[in-house]
Image (cartoon, rainbow, N blue to C red):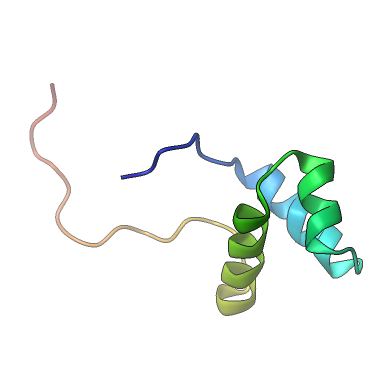
Length: 66
């Protein structure tokens, strides 16, 4: 269960762009006011997938709504 608020796609792309420019993770985390762990996870996922968009969820969607 996530505890923090989600990071928008634009911010994730700016983090990746800063990393590709050659900046350090510590400097990126200070610039965008994000934890170092979040910055490193964004970079790792970008390197694995090649993009920062969310992946589709598995399983059948809910039929009922509240």
